[in-house]
Amino acid sequence: MDLTGLLAIVIGIAVIGLLLIVGLVGTAIGRRRTPRGGTDVVAPPAPAGTAEGAVAAPEAPAAPAAPQLDRPEGTASRLVRLRQRLAGSQSGLGRGLLALLSRDRLDEDTWEDIEDTLLTADLGVAPTQQLVERLRTRLRIEGNEAGDPRTVLREELVALVDPTMDRRLQISGADGKPGVVLVVGVNGAGKTTTVGKISRILVAQEKSVVLGAADTFRAAAVDQLATWGERVGVPVIRGAENGDPASVAFEAAKAAVDGGYDVVLVDTAGRLQNKAGLMDELGKVKRVIEKQAPVTEVLLVLDATTGQNGMIQARVFSEVVDVTGIVLTKLDGSAKGGIVVAVQRELGVPVKLVGLGEGPDDLAPFEPEAFVDALLG
Ligand code: GDP
Image (cartoon, rainbow, N blue to C red; front, top):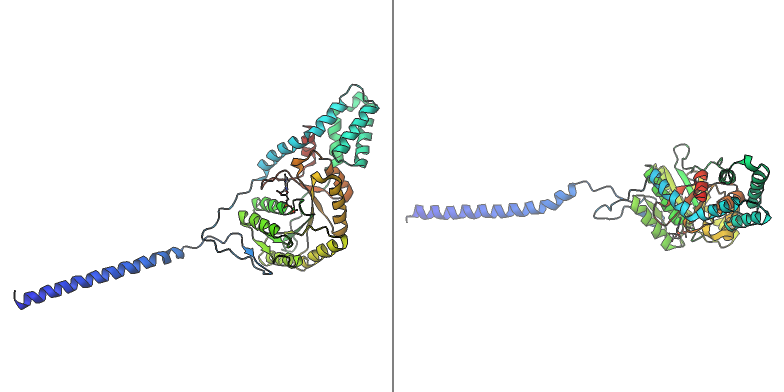
């Protein structure tokens, strides 16, 4: 082989080598670009931010992928389902009353039994006497003209529950401000759960919601509320453990005002330390919120199974804060639906919502006629 041939071979090898090197480097760069290309995709919108400390803006968790959000149940199917559950827990009372009223002779003993049945259902003394009086008049004096006992009982019970009260939740703020709902009640009544459930009702109605976890004395309550929020993509403002509840309430209201949200729901601490302490605490919470926006609704959460205790709590809270609506929880676990009437009488404000189970959508607007129908089975 002459020199020219040798040179051609060397140049050929060099060119092939160069091509190989270029190829390898190119592949390596290409590989490195792939993940960067991945981040170019717009990340899914941050779900429920959970702000820590006295911070204003909801903070998005560093989630690698957006959690699957729940789709809360709509009103129609919720009502059908929960009416059945209400009938299941309360119809014993209605059946008992109807059996007594359908006796051939309504003698004194029977009227006493009717009275006992109503008192056992926590209707309260005054409403019981009033109802018995009305029934006696209509069934005994009007006699057959009064109609059948079921119709008479239904009419009188509906009148007692009072269908004329305005039971709509006040969730609309004026002047572009959010609606502000303050939720109060003793620990264990179902406050935090109710705040979570209301947020789902509002989300189903396509309202934008912020939650304020102002029950700073119980870390579990704060975590519980954060979970409710995360499930439906609602930001939760929380503070340091044992921090000032009023500051969390303030930040929640501020986040709602600044972010142009429709509604802010504030969970509060339910310690019944003493009336003065409770008054100071809730008074301050309300005052600081109102530096941002007026409170449009104060909901008192009461456990329907607690009977007279519940009534005492209701009295204390209504003296401390201007309650505008009542939420009766755990009606599914109690045959004592009479408390609806008793508590409305005591406070002069309507029962607006009833809790009928531990499921996330087991909260329903209170409807007097449907309630009485559930009682009567
Ligand atoms: P809080 O201390 O007042 O905030 O009470 P929670 O919201 O933590 O509720 C206390 C317990 O009551 C929890 O186990 C809830 O699941 C339960 N609860 C709340 N509402 C209802 C209801 O309507 N029905 C039933 N069966 N349980 C409820």
